[in-house]
Length: 310
Length: 282
Image (cartoon, rainbow over all chains, first blue to last red; front, side):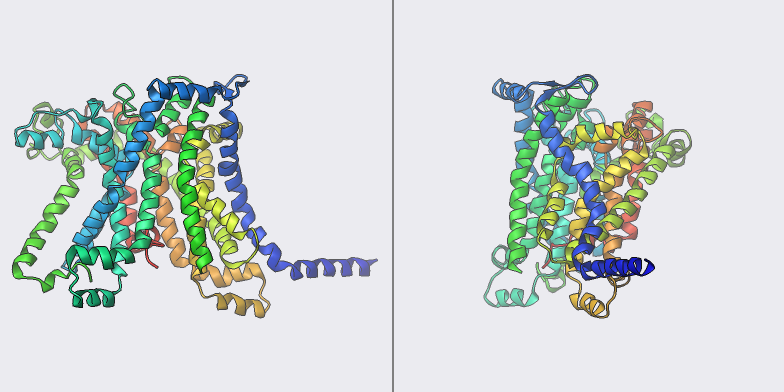
C-alpha cells in the first residue's frame, strides 16, 4: 500500500519533471493573464455588449439593439456633439503629429557636446515628466485673458487681449498646443537616443560625397532614425486619441461643447452630471475603440513582420 | 556626429549657439516658470495687478507652508504614494514573470499572447470605463485605493510585459540552456539566473510606472471621489476649488503636485530614459 503511494508520487513528480518546459510558461503567465483578462480583455467585450442596452447605471438595463448607434448617426448627420467630437479628434490627430518634426528639430539643436548640455537635455525633457493635469493648469493660466503670459506678450507687441479658452474656434488648437509641449519633449528624447546611435562612418562617407545639411539629414540620418520615428508615431497617435486630461482640466469640453473629443464626450455622457447614459457612452467608446483598432492593427502588423524577420 | 559638432565651426557660430541655448530653454519652460513666479508672490500682487513684475515681497515660504499645513494637499500626496508604490511593485512582479514566459519559452500561443498584452496596452480607456467601474463597485472597492491599485496593476502589465519580454530576448540564451543542462528547475532559472540580469530593466520600469501612475487622472476620477482615496492629480481640482482665485496658492499647489515624479526623474534619469527609448535604437 505504502509502496503504491510512493511510486504514484514518484510518477507524478516525474510527469511534472518531464513536462516542465511545457507547463512552466503557463504557470508564469497565469497571474498576469488573469489580471489582464479580468480588467482589460473582458471589459472590452462587456462594453460592446453594453452598447446595445439603455442603462442608467442603477436600474434594469433595457435591450435596444442598435438604437444607440442610430442616435450617434443622427448626432453626426445633424452636426451635433458627436460630429464636433469626431472633427476635433481628427484635428487632434493631425496637429499632434507636429510633435514629431518639432521633437526632431529640438533633438538636432541639442545634439552637441558643449558644457552643461546634459542638464539642458534634461530640462527640455521636463514637460513630459509632469502630469497632464499640471500642464493643463499651467496653460490655462498661460492663456488667461487678464494675467496670462500669452496676453502679456501680445500686449507687448501691441495686440489686443485674446481669450483662447473662451473662443470656440481657437479652443481646440489652444489645448492641442498645450498637449504638444510634453509630446514634443517625448519625441525629442526618442530622437536624441536615436542620434546617439547613428553610424559615424556613414556620416563621414556622406561628407566625403559632399552631402550637407538637409540632404544629409534626409538621405543619411533619417533612414537610420527609422526605429525612433516608428515609436514616435505610435506614442503620438495613441496619445492624441487618448486626449482627456487636458480637456477636462482646461475647458471641461466648453465653450458650448466645442472642445470635446470622443474620449471626453463619452465620459460626459456616461458619468458626469449630464446623466448616466451608460449604453450610449459605451457606443461612443466602441466607435473610438474601432478607430484606434485600425492603428493598433497596423502597429501589431509591423511588429509581426519584424518578429518574422529575425 | 550629426549635426556637425559646434566646436568645429567658426567662433561666431559657437558664441551664437551658446547664447541661443539659455534663451531657447527660457522660452521652452516659460509657462512653467511663470507658475513658479506666481507661487512665491504675495496675494497683494494679484490684487494690484502686478502679475509680471518682481514680487513685492517674497512669500514663497508662506505660500508653500499654507499648501503643506493649511490644506488637504499632504493627504492627497500620501494617497498618491499609497496608490503608486503598490502598483509599481505589483506590475513589475507580474510582468517579470509574463516577460520571462514569453521571452524564454517557445510555444505556439506565444506570439498571440504577447500581442494580446501589447494591443490591450493601446486600448482607449473609455471602452474599459463602465465595466471596470461596475466591477470595482461589485467588489466593494469603489472609492478605495485598493480598487485603483488593482486596476492599475492589471493595465500596466500590458506595457511592462512588452518591455520585459523584449529585454529578456536580448539576454544571452546560452546561460539558460547551460542551467537546463545542469538540471536546474525552471523557477530556479527564473529566480537565480534571469532575475539578477534584469535589474536594469526592473529599475527602468519602476521609475516609468511610478511616473505614469502618479500622473494618472482619468482613473482617479472614475474610481475614486473623496479625500480618503483620491490621489493628488484629482485632489488638485478640489484644492483649486477651495482656493478659488488665490493664484499664488494654486500655483504653489500645482508645483507641489508635480514634484515627486520630477524628483524621481532627476534621481533615476539614466534608467528613465533607457526605459522610454527602448526600441528607439536597433
